[in-house]
Length: 332
Ligand SMILES: NC(=O)C1=CN([C@@H]2O[C@H](COP(=O)(O)OP(=O)(O)OC[C@H]3O[C@@H](n4cnc5c(N)ncnc54)[C@H](OP(=O)(O)O)[C@@H]3O)[C@@H](O)[C@H]2O)C=CC1
Ligand SMILES: C[C@H]1O[C@H](OP(=O)(O)OP(=O)(O)OC[C@H]2O[C@@H](n3cnc4c(=O)[nH]c(N)nc43)[C@H](O)[C@@H]2O)[C@@H](O)[C@@H](O)C1=O
Image 1 (cartoon, rainbow, N blue to C red):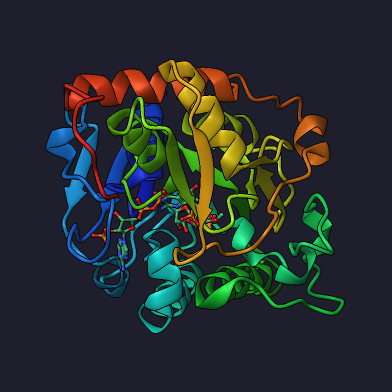
Image 2 (image 1 turned 180 degrees about the vertical axis):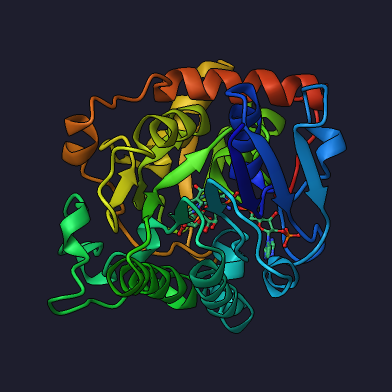
């Protein structure tokens, strides 16, 4: 039976990925400290399968990497301090710890020689100069090219992801090992932490239902490319053997939506039409981040959960969590 190591496996992406890996018959070792950032949940809260196919080690993956190496067919490296826009902007040097974590991953992989390392990079690795009001375009995989000029990525978080991809290139070229990377755009899903915009805005609008005016952070005109977590996991599963060594793939829909449009679409599903305004005292980040999908389409990938459906699922989940919405106001 194939074995997989998942670092950061108690986080949002990790929980969904591990459920899929176990369902596909893999034995999984999940390493996560469950202490530092936002979003991590103990496996007892999300393990929806019986049996012993998941071993959970509550520790920093660097502790795991310091032990004598053991063999894994797949290593999914998700461990990272992320935490949403406020964390990325206000705790940039804490987030820079990701550089150290990723360095340890690649050093360990040289010794452990796993079948395949699957590195979770990010769309934050793309140059921010291509994501401005005056200069933005669909971000395609070849825009990060270590043999040409490299643009400035998004904060220390983006530097860590870009550097992680560079170390992957060295690992593949100098050590002849297999590794690939994914660049998720704005992955979202029902159990995502409220530090992230999709659940936060849905929750706030449920609470504010009926108000004449609601707000989103920043100008509200900034755009993101929201992809449902189930599509992310499917894309990874479909391509993890197909991508060439050292390749990176976007996890994106190619559809940009502004936060004002998103809030309007959510309100419409809740059943009213408020005026949506931006709040400039809340961080906005880059102006326009949307991923080209040509390479994904070349592998036959197409998202199944469209935004309308994703909103419906999120609203249903939140309503079941903490009713009654529509009566109280929240300051989130
Ligand atoms: N969700 C998305 O849309 C996107 C995700 N990504 C990348 O995908 C990966 C997963 O993201 P996501 O699940 O959303 O993020 P989460 O924050 O939900 O999960 C990351 C997990 O990593 C854990 N972690 C942090 N440091 C370490 C460490 N040193 N050793 C072991 N585990 C550690 C965290 O634990 P704790 O909370 O206890 O610190 C957390 O459980 C990350 O690498 C992220 O950068 C990239 C782009 C977009
Ligand atoms: C791909 C990359 O994507 C992410 O980078 P990000 O998009 O900059 O950060 P975010 O997901 O936290 O979204 C923030 C955006 O959302 C807007 N926004 C509006 N209204 C609310 C709001 O009410 N709450 C929140 N939290 N944000 C809001 C806010 O103004 C900003 O524009 C990283 O998480 C990272 O994981 C990553 O790798």
